[in-house]
Length: 359
Ligand code: BGC
Image 1: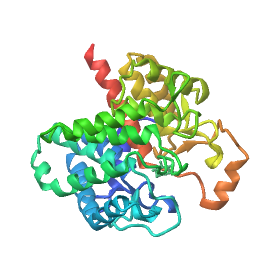
Image 2 (image 1 turned 180 degrees about the vertical axis):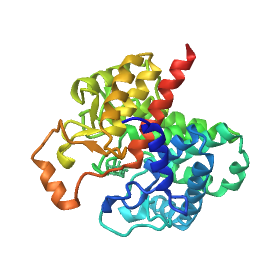
Image 3 (image 1 turned 90 degrees about the horizontal axis):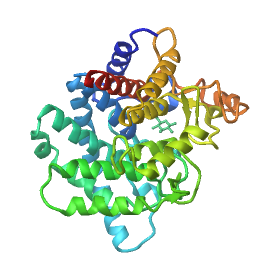
């Protein structure tokens, strides 16, 4: 697909609601909401391509949405202090309606990663635009998010794939660590650095065979482990534990340029995810293996349909092909266009161009 860059920017802008929220996928009914996780990377891609207003609108929407949850955070704090039983409903949601309301359904909603990711996006936004006024404009929602992360970071919650609610997940911890350390650059005092250090120390224990493991309860591998290095910098890309993690991702999850989520994945058959493929490419741009990044970019470009829409996953090479039909009959065809896929393509495209202009 030619001009996938321009098409991706257009698809994202066209699917940003008036409120500022980005819909996860406009054509897939189950994804008609806005996720803090997806949105943070979508907003970041807009920032990279000079679409500052789009990113700013998203941040303003997050700020307003989070503030509506103030009493929930206060209540959770009290419950944890009093050691009374807490349930999923006591935690902040991972996705909202485009008007910033909580979605009342039975789908696992207790995921903490997005709260770290938005703080990371906010500090990227401030640093790239110089709009430091947002530190005071958003003071309340920043403080609320930090208070929430401080009490929840080491509690079990659902992972970024909305599964495994009993575990604690390195990729979730990476988002929390990344968000806290990014925003700490703008907030005086040592407290946040200390908290980030504690989170890092704990995350470094979640390893097996000298590589990161999927979560506290599973030794499997998961491509979201990439987030530990890029962009959240909990470890350097060259760190031996990260390198070993990449080896496992390459050996078990990468095939012909496409990357799967994890070996046991059966969602829509468990195919190759555009966003994760781009993530691995992004990682390669940090380690100087540009050829490999280019190979992935080429593969991704071939996956766009005639209108330039990228899917969530490519259903060619699958873990459990027989599961594809089941999911199609339940939720319809695999989501397309997925805004997060387009965002990650844009991020990879920019990372490769930056490498090229370094020369
Ligand atoms: C994925 C999440 C994502 C959501 C919306 C889910 O299937 O597992 O990571 O946030 O879709 O894109």
